[in-house]
Image (cartoon, rainbow over all chains, first blue to last red; front, side, top):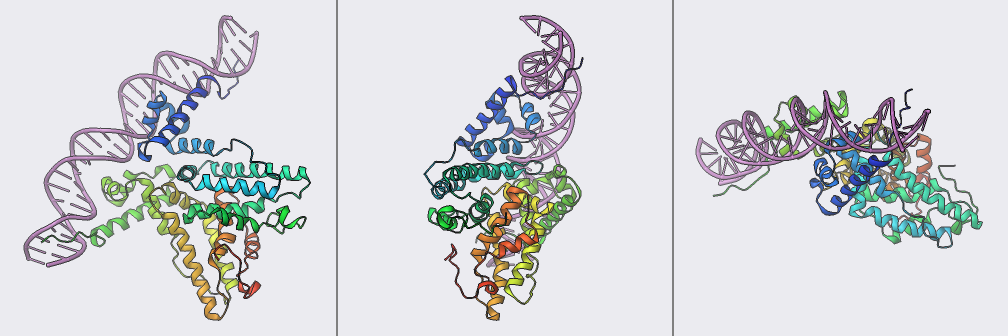
Length: 199
Length: 199
DNA sequence: TTCTTAACGCAAAATATTTGCATTAGTGGC
DNA sequence: GCCACTAATGCAAATATTTTGCGTTAAGAA
């Protein structure tokens, strides 16, 4: 009988995907932007260009795919003992990474072909998931739950806007000022439920 | 002696630039994304492809150039009689335009090659200039001056973040809630100087 | 007007992308 | 383990694109 159609994710396919991703990352670290072409990536990965075209479609989509992987958090945010401290510490390194030349290039790759994809949404979800870890840790300690949508509106959004549209990323001091506006941060204003948009 | 080197901006150059821009806009209105290629644009504009390559470098840069022109405000914001009303009315149409499919595509074009350009900054400046008009109008009426950086942080940034990263543009009602957080809006809290980041 | 040269058109060369067909190798069923 | 099925790949030819050299046109200054 007919074998059910299934997408292949192991063995050679996985190996090629890894080789191609590795080649892209290496070339991004070494060469200038316009040295990175599909044929060049294929050559370094030991693969035929047509394989890349068929799997990823265009260079832009491949770069976006790689960028999402590089933006995926590799570890939980540091546990400083308080929600306030956790958020503050995480934001600081988030800004550092995102405002760096590499970080901005990755964001460009993410947006460049956001046509049919939802890559930007995935980035936001990474942020959301990190904040959920911090929130749940706080709840386990008995603190009032962090309002994540409020953090996105009041802290993350201005940070991204400054990086993307003004090219003036906030300093650590300015980040703390942004955080001071958040009303659901337990150590500032315990129990007072924020009238945030997400309510 | 040697004639001073000057960039040419009139006559044929201007005509070609206009023709090419027009061709791009028409094709964006008609065809799908991948129908838009440099040779196709050149053919419709009655120009040689090499002219486009030499003037704009790549398709991405040409699209970004067109996008900036399309995002440039064509008129001053409506005068409703109060700063609060002006901002509210302008924000509503700003969200409509930016969150539309066309608006999102233009933002993509702007970011796609933000490498050496400052196109995103120019977009932010358009917003800033519009808010300056509203602010100055309020000052002429005797109202306290609008804090523009505060508007960018508290209202514009979350709007853009939701459009770009969450694909959930705010409703008019949500925009009003964002505006309610702004402390420098005279009709809400006259004279109380905001402790905004820009201070 | 005349001079200088930036910007353009044309066409050949170099690259990149697409596509048809043969081959390789996951995946599930036995 | 073995087999059947077919997704995924490799290869190479066919297209499409981008780049480049060189002659021509026309904008801007004296």
